[in-house]
Image (cartoon, rainbow, N blue to C red; front, top):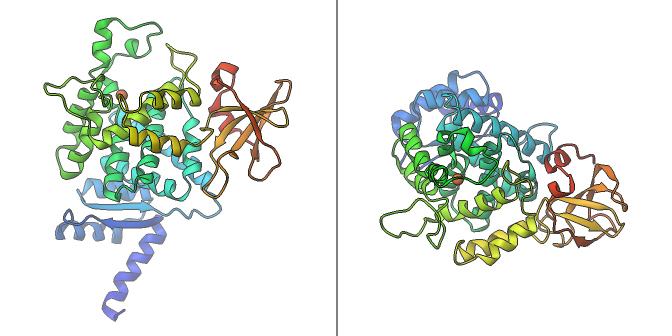
Length: 388
Ligand SMILES: [Fe+2]
């Protein structure tokens, strides 16, 4: 280090400490000299939160530079950090869908990158959080769960960082077009009429139009927009929208299609109070592998979700009933997930208790074909009230 750059390095270290900055990434070919100047000027003068830094970068049009928060929050384990990120992201998605200017593309991209980082460190923790559903504000949780499942799948396929960010960003907003669908159609308890169904089927196109207006065309958005437009298309073209020419969905759309299907059918809706159990959803995916869903991706998805996907209701060798809350980590046998014990051997409900089957002489002896809701269990409540 020379005397001239000492002050600069000090400024950077200070900024990393003060703002909770963990990583800065410069995308080759996307950063201009002017953009770099603006970025370092902001770092030198900004004295606020990490969130504020993102807003400043957005206001000043700094492009091609990704910043990510530091993951080493003192005193917090990865489960706490993942939960915090989950709920912060929900707020961000809600704000974005409601048209708040503060919820910008820069922030959504940063969250997508942060989710990918956490997934890389602890896939089981993040995937465990996808059992969190919200019956009333379905769309926000759905978009976030789809982003987690899509990114998890993409990481297993070794996708590049650049594509991961495009995929995660696209997944986080993939249903933005639903804001244009009247609430009475979205929340209709019965079967939709043909006209109402036509309105619903327009949401990928409406979503694309919205994002085009908001974010414009760039190399980054051009990668993610097809994923938003084609996330219901399916391999057999049986989905929507209908194109003039038969066109296979892009790779990112095929990933989102699987994650979207899985999360949607395992979540109760106003028109369907008895969703698929995780095992039923996996069976459907496998049954339609090759026609509706990309077979290679289905295979990777099945491997990712594991033998007992999170949310599966199981019987233990103690006779107790439990719900799977975390798949086993890499080093642990496939049949030893982390569960929440929810009822005793007579089916009497218990306060959910966390039990890591890799550490206990207890085994899974049976799998229920019912979803948690069908037996009066709310997976969100179980996950959030779990005692160690
Ligand atoms: Fe959708």
